[in-house]
Length: 209
Image 1 (cartoon, rainbow, N blue to C red):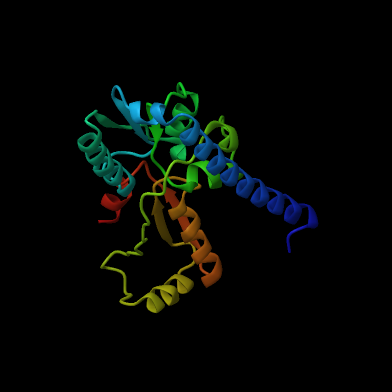
Image 2: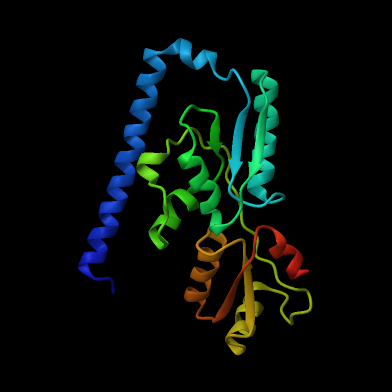
Protein backbone atom coordinates (compact mmCIF):
# COMPACT_ATOMS: atom_id res chain seq x y z
CA UNK A 1 0.00 0.00 0.00
CA UNK A 2 1.12 3.52 -0.67
CA UNK A 3 2.17 5.58 2.28
CA UNK A 4 0.03 8.45 3.56
CA UNK A 5 2.66 10.87 2.24
CA UNK A 6 2.41 9.36 -1.27
CA UNK A 7 -1.37 9.61 -1.20
CA UNK A 8 -1.22 13.22 -0.06
CA UNK A 9 1.28 14.02 -2.83
CA UNK A 10 -0.93 12.41 -5.48
CA UNK A 11 -4.01 14.26 -4.23
CA UNK A 12 -2.12 17.56 -4.22
CA UNK A 13 -0.96 17.01 -7.82
CA UNK A 14 -4.51 16.21 -8.93
CA UNK A 15 -5.97 19.32 -7.29
CA UNK A 16 -3.16 21.44 -8.76
CA UNK A 17 -3.88 20.09 -12.25
CA UNK A 18 -7.60 20.85 -11.92
CA UNK A 19 -6.88 24.40 -10.71
CA UNK A 20 -4.41 24.87 -13.58
CA UNK A 21 -6.90 23.89 -16.29
CA UNK A 22 -9.65 25.98 -14.67
CA UNK A 23 -7.37 29.02 -14.45
CA UNK A 24 -6.33 28.59 -18.07
CA UNK A 25 -9.95 28.48 -19.23
CA UNK A 26 -10.67 31.72 -17.37
CA UNK A 27 -7.51 33.36 -18.70
CA UNK A 28 -8.35 32.41 -22.28
CA UNK A 29 -11.90 33.70 -21.90
CA UNK A 30 -10.70 37.03 -20.53
CA UNK A 31 -8.07 37.37 -23.24
CA UNK A 32 -10.55 36.76 -26.04
CA UNK A 33 -13.07 39.12 -24.50
CA UNK A 34 -10.65 41.94 -23.79
CA UNK A 35 -8.71 41.83 -27.05
CA UNK A 36 -10.90 40.46 -29.85
CA UNK A 37 -8.84 42.25 -32.49
CA UNK A 38 -5.61 40.54 -31.42
CA UNK A 39 -7.12 37.09 -31.94
CA UNK A 40 -8.37 38.06 -35.41
CA UNK A 41 -4.92 39.32 -36.45
CA UNK A 42 -3.25 35.98 -35.75
CA UNK A 43 -1.39 34.58 -37.60
CA UNK A 44 0.54 37.12 -39.63
CA UNK A 45 3.44 34.76 -40.45
CA UNK A 46 4.44 31.08 -40.43
CA UNK A 47 3.36 29.02 -37.40
CA UNK A 48 5.61 26.13 -36.35
CA UNK A 49 3.96 23.05 -34.88
CA UNK A 50 6.50 21.00 -32.91
CA UNK A 51 5.89 17.26 -32.65
CA UNK A 52 8.16 15.71 -29.97
CA UNK A 53 8.26 12.38 -31.80
CA UNK A 54 9.86 11.01 -34.96
CA UNK A 55 8.07 11.47 -38.27
CA UNK A 56 5.61 8.83 -39.40
CA UNK A 57 3.84 8.12 -36.12
CA UNK A 58 0.21 8.74 -35.25
CA UNK A 59 0.85 12.07 -33.54
CA UNK A 60 2.95 13.26 -36.48
CA UNK A 61 0.29 12.28 -39.02
CA UNK A 62 -2.44 14.09 -37.06
CA UNK A 63 -0.24 17.17 -36.71
CA UNK A 64 0.33 17.30 -40.47
CA UNK A 65 -3.38 16.95 -41.20
CA UNK A 66 -4.07 19.73 -38.72
CA UNK A 67 -1.33 21.92 -40.21
CA UNK A 68 -2.71 21.50 -43.71
CA UNK A 69 -6.23 22.34 -42.58
CA UNK A 70 -5.15 25.44 -40.64
CA UNK A 71 -2.97 26.65 -43.51
CA UNK A 72 -5.91 26.44 -45.89
CA UNK A 73 -8.38 28.07 -43.52
CA UNK A 74 -6.18 30.90 -42.23
CA UNK A 75 -4.12 31.58 -45.34
CA UNK A 76 -0.78 31.32 -43.54
CA UNK A 77 1.68 28.41 -43.54
CA UNK A 78 1.58 25.99 -40.62
CA UNK A 79 4.66 23.75 -40.71
CA UNK A 80 5.40 20.63 -38.67
CA UNK A 81 8.82 20.27 -37.10
CA UNK A 82 9.81 16.93 -35.56
CA UNK A 83 12.07 17.16 -32.50
CA UNK A 84 12.18 13.61 -31.20
CA UNK A 85 14.13 12.13 -28.33
CA UNK A 86 14.13 11.84 -24.57
CA UNK A 87 10.64 10.30 -24.47
CA UNK A 88 9.35 13.49 -26.07
CA UNK A 89 11.03 15.83 -23.61
CA UNK A 90 13.44 17.33 -26.17
CA UNK A 91 10.69 18.79 -28.34
CA UNK A 92 8.60 19.73 -25.32
CA UNK A 93 11.54 21.58 -23.75
CA UNK A 94 12.17 23.39 -27.03
CA UNK A 95 8.62 24.76 -27.06
CA UNK A 96 8.80 25.69 -23.37
CA UNK A 97 11.85 27.85 -24.12
CA UNK A 98 10.48 29.38 -27.32
CA UNK A 99 9.24 32.97 -27.47
CA UNK A 100 5.64 32.91 -26.13
CA UNK A 101 4.15 34.71 -29.12
CA UNK A 102 1.76 32.05 -30.42
CA UNK A 103 3.96 31.03 -33.35
CA UNK A 104 5.56 27.93 -31.81
CA UNK A 105 2.97 25.33 -30.82
CA UNK A 106 3.36 21.93 -29.16
CA UNK A 107 1.37 19.05 -30.63
CA UNK A 108 1.31 16.17 -28.15
CA UNK A 109 -0.77 14.36 -25.57
CA UNK A 110 -0.74 14.48 -21.80
CA UNK A 111 2.32 12.22 -21.60
CA UNK A 112 5.02 14.87 -21.91
CA UNK A 113 3.19 17.54 -19.95
CA UNK A 114 1.60 15.50 -17.15
CA UNK A 115 2.94 11.95 -16.88
CA UNK A 116 6.65 12.27 -17.73
CA UNK A 117 7.34 15.10 -15.22
CA UNK A 118 6.06 12.78 -12.49
CA UNK A 119 8.49 10.04 -13.52
CA UNK A 120 11.68 11.92 -14.29
CA UNK A 121 13.33 15.30 -13.90
CA UNK A 122 12.54 17.66 -16.78
CA UNK A 123 13.63 21.23 -17.52
CA UNK A 124 10.10 22.59 -17.98
CA UNK A 125 7.19 23.29 -15.66
CA UNK A 126 3.89 22.10 -17.06
CA UNK A 127 1.84 24.51 -15.00
CA UNK A 128 3.84 27.63 -15.89
CA UNK A 129 5.34 26.96 -19.33
CA UNK A 130 2.27 25.77 -21.24
CA UNK A 131 -1.32 26.76 -21.89
CA UNK A 132 -3.62 24.05 -23.33
CA UNK A 133 -5.42 25.32 -26.42
CA UNK A 134 -7.61 22.51 -27.69
CA UNK A 135 -8.21 18.75 -27.63
CA UNK A 136 -8.03 17.55 -31.23
CA UNK A 137 -8.29 13.75 -31.29
CA UNK A 138 -8.77 10.56 -29.33
CA UNK A 139 -6.61 7.53 -30.09
CA UNK A 140 -7.01 3.77 -29.68
CA UNK A 141 -4.10 1.43 -28.99
CA UNK A 142 -3.72 -1.93 -30.70
CA UNK A 143 -1.93 -4.88 -29.12
CA UNK A 144 0.00 -6.91 -31.70
CA UNK A 145 2.39 -9.88 -31.60
CA UNK A 146 4.52 -11.72 -34.13
CA UNK A 147 2.55 -14.25 -36.18
CA UNK A 148 5.12 -16.92 -35.34
CA UNK A 149 4.19 -16.96 -31.65
CA UNK A 150 2.02 -19.95 -30.69
CA UNK A 151 -0.87 -17.73 -29.57
CA UNK A 152 -3.95 -16.85 -31.59
CA UNK A 153 -6.00 -15.10 -28.93
CA UNK A 154 -5.24 -12.62 -26.16
CA UNK A 155 -5.89 -15.27 -23.51
CA UNK A 156 -3.48 -17.65 -25.24
CA UNK A 157 -0.84 -14.93 -25.30
CA UNK A 158 -1.19 -14.34 -21.54
CA UNK A 159 -0.83 -18.08 -20.91
CA UNK A 160 2.26 -18.20 -23.13
CA UNK A 161 3.82 -15.20 -21.40
CA UNK A 162 3.22 -16.75 -17.97
CA UNK A 163 4.93 -19.93 -19.16
CA UNK A 164 7.91 -17.93 -20.47
CA UNK A 165 8.70 -15.23 -17.88
CA UNK A 166 11.31 -12.69 -18.98
CA UNK A 167 11.60 -14.17 -22.48
CA UNK A 168 9.24 -11.80 -24.27
CA UNK A 169 10.12 -8.23 -25.25
CA UNK A 170 7.66 -5.41 -25.80
CA UNK A 171 8.46 -2.27 -27.76
CA UNK A 172 7.47 1.35 -27.17
CA UNK A 173 8.39 4.73 -28.62
CA UNK A 174 10.24 5.65 -25.42
CA UNK A 175 10.28 5.13 -21.65
CA UNK A 176 7.59 6.88 -19.68
CA UNK A 177 5.21 7.12 -22.62
CA UNK A 178 1.63 5.88 -22.75
CA UNK A 179 2.56 2.71 -24.65
CA UNK A 180 5.26 1.84 -22.14
CA UNK A 181 3.11 2.55 -19.09
CA UNK A 182 -0.05 0.89 -20.42
CA UNK A 183 1.84 -2.28 -21.33
CA UNK A 184 3.58 -2.29 -17.96
CA UNK A 185 0.17 -1.97 -16.30
CA UNK A 186 -1.13 -4.86 -18.40
CA UNK A 187 1.83 -7.01 -17.37
CA UNK A 188 1.34 -6.16 -13.70
CA UNK A 189 -2.36 -6.96 -13.74
CA UNK A 190 -1.94 -10.13 -15.77
CA UNK A 191 0.98 -11.32 -13.64
CA UNK A 192 3.41 -11.69 -16.54
CA UNK A 193 7.07 -10.67 -16.87
CA UNK A 194 8.13 -8.96 -20.11
CA UNK A 195 11.19 -6.87 -21.02
CA UNK A 196 10.64 -3.28 -22.14
CA UNK A 197 12.64 -2.22 -25.23
CA UNK A 198 12.29 1.51 -26.00
CA UNK A 199 12.73 2.65 -29.61
CA UNK A 200 13.13 6.03 -31.23
CA UNK A 201 9.71 6.61 -32.69
CA UNK A 202 7.84 4.24 -34.98
CA UNK A 203 10.88 2.04 -35.72
CA UNK A 204 9.37 -0.20 -33.06
CA UNK A 205 6.79 -1.41 -35.59
CA UNK A 206 9.46 -2.29 -38.15
CA UNK A 207 11.35 -4.26 -35.51
CA UNK A 208 8.25 -6.30 -34.72
CA UNK A 209 7.88 -7.29 -38.34
